[in-house]
Length: 271
Image (tube, rainbow, N blue to C red; front, side, top):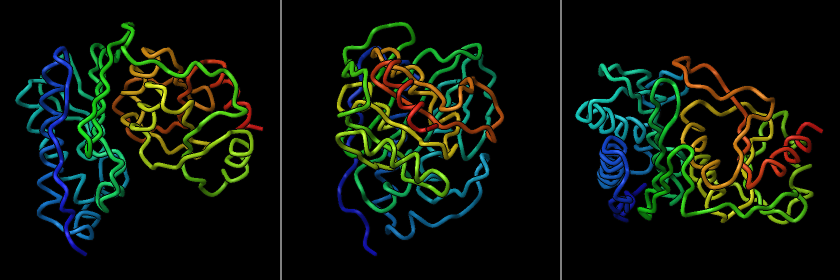
């Protein structure tokens, strides 16, 4: 397999992004660009270790997370990441980060992967940044501060445009119940980017139809970004999404344009 020849642009960040988020996002983009210039697709996809969350670590994940860890240390913030776990840099602020959301896409050159990070102060997420690697587009939000982008405002599932996690064993019927009511269904395989698309109004909703795949870093940025844009982020089974260092916890995230649409999605999935 050949290397991916396309360059990765520097993120286009707003001026008021927290320095730690800006530093780590830029480090992530540059590391990803270097990784795919130096390694073939097969090499980037190779599983080289097990992460702190118990899932395999691809080479592309390690490349990018190492750069983020160095940037977080320079910024003086703690780091919580799926591969390294918790890194204590002696700060009251912790950066919860998914270094490469959509790792398989990133390794193979499918241009649908991103960096997602949220700054947590005293266990409360206060600011989030999602960066689409292949375009440099960024979604930035602060808790309780309206964003310049908004959700579609859709309140009903029938006719909606929905992103769904691919159907996994045991979720097929729930997946089809949603698909049969929606107008369009997309499977992009990158939760953080899909949640950002909900926030900006490109799609009406995103859902994991019950596979309990999501970890804290898959949803923490969206927990700031989606509500700030007028939407709702919930767990399918009503479990609170709270900060903690236990990376064994799992959720089935629902991001929707409105609380009403989120509730209907949940009812449809649960049958």
